[in-house]
Image 1 (cartoon, rainbow, N blue to C red):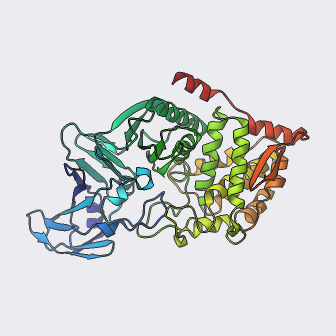
Image 2 (cartoon, one colour; image 1 turned 90 degrees about the horizontal axis):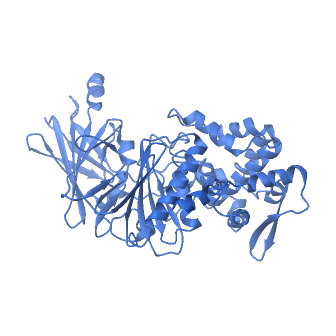
Image 3 (tube, rainbow, N blue to C red; image 1 turned 90 degrees about the vertical axis):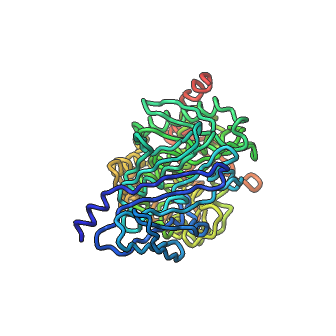
Length: 498
């Protein structure tokens, strides 16, 4: 039985995706071989999407599942919440069919929906999987009208696309229909930008490409190369806000909304999602893959994986010349203000904010009672300054991030406590005690004292915290401040080219 199971699990699971002409729904046919001796198979639809830590129970809108054998004989299907159990009978091959409604709403600024011209979806909302065969390779074919386009980072085959397993299939969103496409290359890797949404013809696509290329070059240079063969930006363009950008990360693509303003908010959103190619998708804790799609993970390291990602999403473009030193000081003040405006910081630690995310009641994920985005951003800055100070400028938080990458580069997750170990490795024993106090316990982060070590002063200006240079600082604090504020002119060159 075990040999038969290993043999059949290696056989691919095939999907055929057929959108309706009116784009209101998608029909999916799923084919797979039966395992000899197995009388039933359990199919499930995920209850959440990795990267979006919210329980959404996609199975609630799926109730038309049917199954038949290779000879056309109907097979009984029993449904219980997120699971459909198929009685196999004597079938050797099973064909499962179902329909998924599409979403053309503007909820979440259209990140997970199509429009009148195209369909966009993420894998967890669309593909059923076999509970005991998620490691089987998957093939997908799209049955579309002539003239339709498709954008996905799945591996292209002679007929259709493939994925190594269900996790990879679910992690590759799809845009299909009639959308606007732009491309660019960085380091011999191809990048595709698929524009859809109500403002796709209003957004400055040439500038969007310049921003995306700038981010791609800056962040791949930081890590020493891109960990994928090709990348897709699934962009929902919106004019509902002056500036902004954000979405959900994937290992070779992102689902993202961008405002037509294309200001610092859009730059930060794009930089954040692209940095997730490393932080979260590859530099990850053990609970973040392979995934249990039936329940949310308890991930205490989200302060680092999301919050420190936010830190680098600001700092790497800044170092490359985007924005001004005053913008950086304003950003520091804004992040500290966001942290200190929430009294729950005295009750919930940064670690627990992520670990207890399954207990949070959020329309969008941000942690349990304490938002791990500004909290992690602030922690990233404070640890960065501490490491620079204790190493006399020879080390920084960059070494910790790259140390984690060296552990995870081969596909491994970092073990529990590894962030602490890396902080100690590059900053000394005192960093371990700071981690234990700042990350593992609730309380006030000593921003005033740490910023002073970098020649910066924190003060209250009305209801907002403000950061400025300490003109009396000299010696090492001044040197650290100058290093933090240092910039190259790469964005000016990119902007001139655009």
